[in-house]
Length: 171
Image (tube, rainbow, N blue to C red; front, side, top):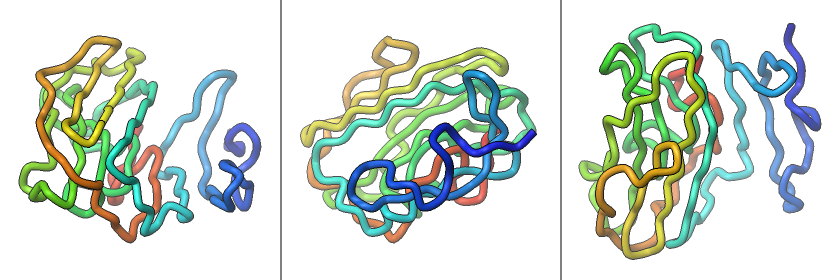
């Protein structure tokens, strides 16, 4: 059964500043399932994320299809300025995240990789950037050491994407 996300999808002001979301998800009593689709927030195109940023998401991968899978961000690797994404490594259970700043080359973007999120289990990811470094948390525990970096996140002409990054759907 396909339903709109809580509060409805499309032209709904989610933040009080004219940003709207569009997309379709399959939903249940306490989850949203992305099966070949995702949510897009085009109001965040060319958005200046600044030099203080955090992203937090609960997720559960229902299966591994041997592909990368976007969870949350504004684009895959160098296409966007930040992302949290599942990998195909470790039978599709590896994941991580990273940011790209004006002072950090895109080759250094994937700062955190290799956390394990077993298929079928709920996990929590939190990525925090304070202008001096990036920290990644997996299920409430810091994952690896803080990565020193500085500058504003790069401004990209990309929507905020939920459940997809660069055409790589989360399932």
